Every structure is written in structure tokens, then in C-alpha cells.
Length: 390
Image (tube, rainbow, N blue to C red):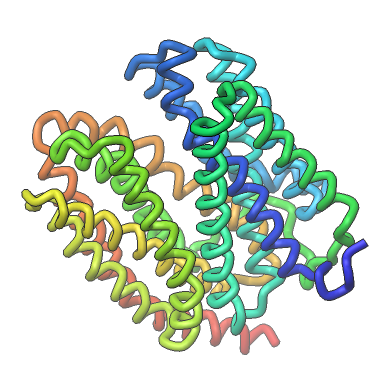
């Protein structure tokens, strides 16, 4: 049995984040090679797979209906178990339908966990400690990703194991960690009983819009920034791996500091800095002709992700505490609207003009920058509502 101080809510959030990152990072790192070498995927099949992977994220709002039956903590653990089983089974189905099926299974667990984890973080952490702890969680995930990449390198370079064995190992470790979490941690009570119904409130409009544009920005980075590095600057898989490693190392060091910094300067200033930076980064992507400058932009772009903590802490400050569970599902769905729309529509735009894709990203960042200037007004409104109801 763990000592009492290691059975805390914060320790639970850290440990579940490690489990999620370990299994999901392994799945992502191995996917493209496995899909091409074993399942003989072309661009058509991998595109279908990625679309199927995002569907559970788009349906994240349905988490609130599951919470009618089980607690959030139990749901989070079961989601991790489902994700781990999906990863463990992946190598056993090296063909089109099989890989689609294991991907959807993994994705259901991943997206439901992310939804509930976000809810529990905002419920369990105080408004004062939330920015710093959320930054620490990003750092923990970065470290877990680096460990995963290192293990994959050892498995395939030293022990020469198969994809089936690799997926089975990482998925099985995930299941074992799930069992340990299930028995080692107590069942924590929520500080405020959550509303078990779908809630969309007019007064959360700014949070919804910032969440949507944040999702759009993430898709441009994930789909098109890396693709540009390969198509335009001939980056090899090894070069991209180096960029990923740099990104995780920087997050490992800077994310906790960024979290504490957000707590000091406030959400409006932090997001203003992010969106001004993104306007410059996306404009740089559109115009860059030097591979090293493009790599620097890619690293800076990824580092800005930590500033998105401010969107979560802004919502924590304006929300009715009883709305957090329901709103986490809604916000995750809103975030994934962009995941459904951006890759396909901007892919067509890319065929016509890659530069236009990134200038569109800069325009989205500009809209977010304008919206961000309303944050303090909405915080004051929320404070007035809170005072009126107490």
C-alpha cells in the first residue's frame, strides 16, 4: 500500500498521465511504419484511419451520460484500461479493418480519459495551484514520451522485436498500471457534486470560441507544419524524430515554469502573448525558405501549446463548479469540430496554395487575439454572478 502522501489527488493525476502518455505515445510512434509495412496502407487508408481516430473526440460530450452510472474517477480508470487493451491488440490485426477497429477502441479510451482527466483536474485543483500543476502535468507527459521513444529505439535496434510484441508490451504495461491504480488509490470525493446532464451556457461563449480556435490551431500544427518540413525541406524521419525530442525536452523544462507564470500574470496576458506569437509563427511558416528557420518555428510553435493552460484556468474561474464535468465533454467536442473540418478542407487548400493554409492559421490566431481581450470582462462578470448568488 502506498504511503498516504503518495495517495493524493495530485499523485493520481500524475500517475494516470504517465500511463496515458506511455501507451498513446507508443501507438503513435509505431503507427505509420506498422500501417505501411504490415497492413500495406496507402495514403487513402491512413487518412480514413486518422478520421476514425478523431470521431470519439467529437463524441466526447457523451461522457456525461456515462457519468449517470459511474463516478468520474472510475470512468477515467476504465478509459485507460480500454485504451491500453486497444494498444495491446493493435499488432494482432495487421490488416485494414482490424487496424481500424483497434484504432477506434484505443481512441475511445484515450478521448474519454482526456475529457474526464480535464474535468477532475479543474475540480480537484484550487484556482491558485491549477496553472502550476497543469504545467507540471505537461512536463510529466513530456518525460514519459521521451522514455517511450527511448524504449522503442532499444526494442527495435537492440532486441529486434516485432511490432506485435512492441504493441503487446506497451499495452500490457498500461493494463498492469491500470490495475495498480485501481487498487492503490482511494476513491476521492468531488468537492462539488456535478450536474449529470448536458449543459451549454451562453455565459461560457468566450471559452467555447477560444476552445474551437485552439483546436483549429492544433490541427494546422499536427497535420501541416510537419508535412511542410518533409515536403518542402526534405526532412527525414530521423530529422523529425529529433524535432520531437527537442519539443519534449523543452516542455519538460519550461512547462512547469509557464504554468506558474500564467498564475502570476493572468490568463489574458498569457494568451495575448501566445496569439501574437502564433501570428508571427504561422506567417513565418508561410514565408520561410530556410530549413533551419523552419525547424526553429516548429519548436517555438510547440512550446506555445503550454500557454493554452490559460484557457482551462480561465474556464475554471468563470464556471459554476457544478458544470465542470459536463462542460469538459462539451469543450472536448468543440475542440474536435476542428479536427473533423481542418484536415480535409485545408488539405484541398494545400493542393492549391500551402502558403494560404498558414496565413489562414495566422488569421485564426488574430481572431483569438481579439477574443482574448474580453477575458477580464468575462472574469468580472463571473465574479459579480458569484457574489450575487452567495
